Image 1 (cartoon, rainbow over the protein chains, first blue to last red):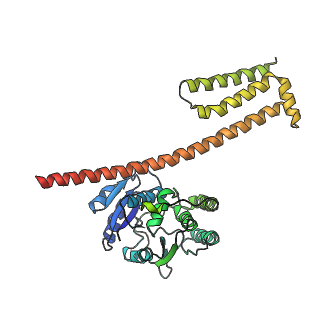
Image 2: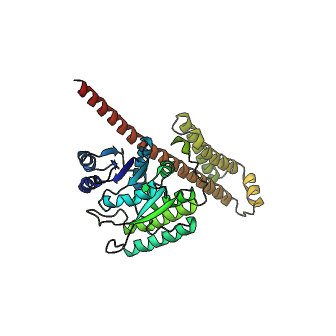
Image 3: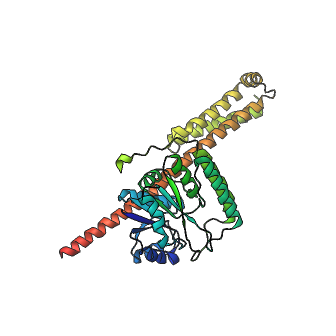
Length: 235
Length: 124
């Protein structure tokens, strides 16, 4: 099974090197999608031997992950892993999400943060996350404990679906619904994560109100959409 | 003709002519000109004929005829603005796809170039 690890990176020159080194322990190709960084992200990534795609300007996290998805599909990979460039994801946990896809149990596998000793969320984020969980369960019947997690594995079907429609900003929650509604198998598996190596989360408190509204609107509208026609024959 | 109507007529005709001129200069597409032209045409029509304005206003229950002008104006402007939002969404979608396409093509070009260089180096 050919697997591509996609690292979306915007000004992650400090962390991306260590992340690529961490990924060496897993047998996969590494692609850094540089979302128009103004620092040395691309150069550092190349030095560490990763393939690098650079956007001509900043497209946001959704567009960046989607570029990786399009690349994986173009080059005939069987699956792609989304792996954060800031160091909070751990390469030793990859086999858990890949396992679900490799065994055919899932088309989209989501690594959810396990609580013991590990991850601490702010109050607002926790509330938001819980609200999303409820909405996801209502719309898709799926229980996903950590729907905003960006530690994921996309199987072939998910690559095909998301190469066509993947939201620009805050795509994580929406993509779960899109996948489930289009008949893809979405599964979760608990994983360990680290705290961030450096820098801050992209979701600030000021933006989180917009985040909630945008995602809620997207979820409601998405549930009114017709299914995408995925042509599996092209695979 | 009173002063207000003259001003209104001159303005509406001016805007009409300006839109036509923009299309002639290829600075505005026909597609987007249509709504603007119909807005100004409608206002010209209702300004010229006070009778038409009064009949139209009273028939839908507006007792102060000039407010029909405002209503029509606001409605058309709203349509134009929504049209712009739709166009903007479509443009940002294609912009997004183009940027990704460029990035992927550049990657492919780099790969092919380095493969060719490696091959040439091998031959030497």
